Image (cartoon, rainbow, N blue to C red; front, side, top):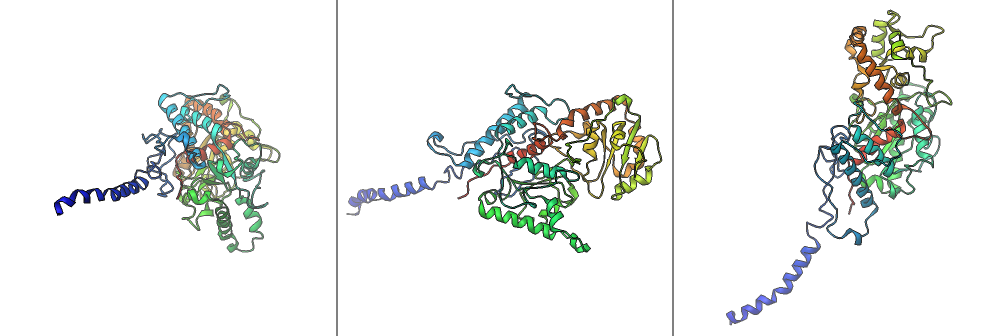
Length: 475
């Protein structure tokens, strides 16, 4: 009987087998949600799932370091499946990456025929990639500026004098004419937290009555609370763990906003003027911004630079003894040499901007902090900047090759400044000076902002870091 019943027992297993097959198809490890490789333009994954952001933005440095091509997130006909907002954004970024890679490989670019400026020459690490990336940014990039918070701490900053570029940037981002302005957060590639560190210090920290009043805890608490507010009201911070969010500040205290809670701000993008790598600045995530001093009603100093052959001063500096590097500079050179003119206070009747315009080289030492407006002032005066700083990450270094239009002198060779500069042949100096003129447009302030100006350069740096991550829907 057993042998005659066996075939029927075999058929009785068919329903169970069909059920198991159905379960496998529904929960297969090859399901599209799980088969989702991370696209990266750097040597290491920048997925916020792994919290690994160690690769520098390499689009404009050495080209793409990964040969992994973008893969569709679905095995099905995408025309019949409605994509989420995040998938649309990631597809948009994938097209931008492909266009930039093509520009790198072909050493050319795709133009709309309306360009007014095309970057060329060795002042750019990769001019083709830079141009294509900037064009892709202009065409695609959308930023949501959070609306939470009130004046004067949020949505408002200084637009004149010291830290002026902080307020100018916030104001530009709030301007309804801004082409990067997203009309809804679901349309945004990146998210801006528009608090002003300068205004927090100016209003929350007054009056200063003791040394304890300089502690950063109130600033850190304010920023942490602001992040918690936007994270509670919107999904976007938690979705990326802050990897597509950024702040902007030129105040000396700005780097300290994240030090009280490093885990919360691990992936956060900080646009900082005070870009000191010895104090926690991370070039792979953070952005070095040019420090620019703006007098009332002006967007830059007058252009008083002379022709290179008519510049009679070898090197020039005027400024207070702020910090040990300046103290060392003044000790060796203060009012001691007609060729290397170093002053703590300008002689009566002398004009600071005119003296820069008459100088071949402008000395740019650190003050109490690494950032100062002197580099940009030198560039405006078409004077070759001489960088005398430790641990300073120069602005827009993922695009610009500073060695082609500036001179770097180590702090321990301050006493040799004249010898070093006189050893540079005049023909090489002229080349350096012409390149300073070429890069000046990238440090100019315009309102509204213009392509390739300093505000767009800052936004382009944010754009690069957004290109270097790929976000996924969370279950």
